[in-house]
Length: 180
Image (cartoon, rainbow, N blue to C red; front, side):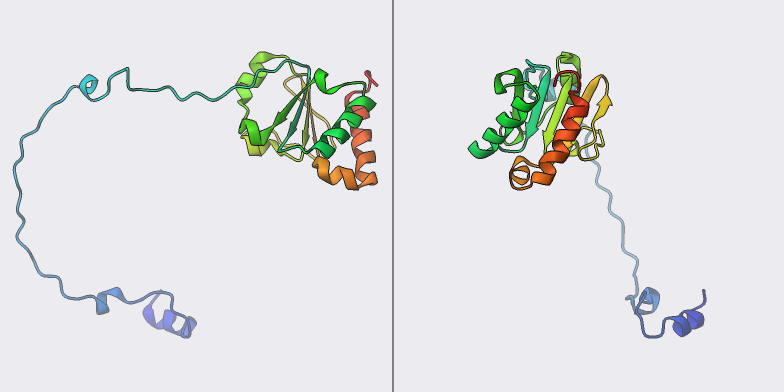
C-alpha cells in the first residue's frame, strides 16, 4: 500500500507513524570488545541434590465411593446436604466431603489411581477450577473413566429454589438409580 492510498483511506486515523522521517540521524560508533576469561564450573557444584526439592502436589486420600466437592460449606448448607444424601440413602460418613477452600486442589491422576470413587458430585465448583479437563453440563451426569460426575448449583443457591432442588433430584435419580 502506498502512502498516498493509506492517507486517502485512513486520513482521520493514526495507524502508524512514519518512523524514517521522524527518527534522528544515526551515527557510527566505535565497537569495543572486552576479552574475558571463561570459567568452567561443574553443574554438581552449582546444584547439589540436597538442595533440590521435588514439587509435590498434595493428594487427598479418598475413602468412600461418593465424593462431594464444594467451595465452602456453612452449617445450613451442611444440613441441606444431609437431607440430599438421606434422600439417596447415604449419610455424611459414607461420603468424602471436600471443601476446596481447605484443600486448594485435587490431583486428577492421584484421584484416578486410588480407584475408590464411583460417584462425584460437585456443588458449584466447575472442574476447570481444580485443573481437571472434564467439561460438565449442569445437572447432566457424565461418566468419565468409570466415575459418574455431576455438576450442580451451589448449596446456598439450592436452599432458596424448589425448582433447582427438583432438577437436582432428577439428576441424582438417574445417577444413583439402583441405590434409591
